[in-house]
Image (cartoon, rainbow, N blue to C red):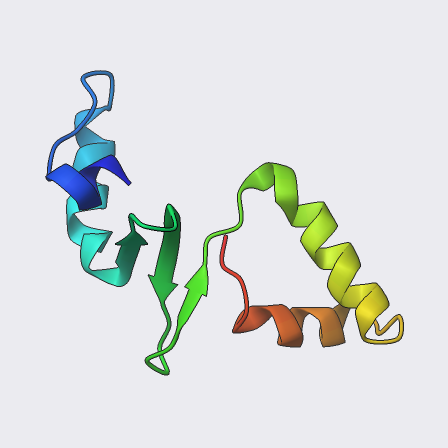
Length: 84
């Protein structure tokens, strides 16, 4: 989120990574009041970024909440609700 907030990079970021971030920055929104990074989706909606440590919990919650649907069903539900 640093680049989206300040248009600057931390010093240890590789040049190739910096270039990719600059090219892809328009696809993201950072809500500083909530400290949430969102990805703009193709349909115009946004989905919150889910950090690695929360992904298993997110998938499990969807799986259980929707009656233990299979992997295809979980994927379809998460496609517009989360991004990683």
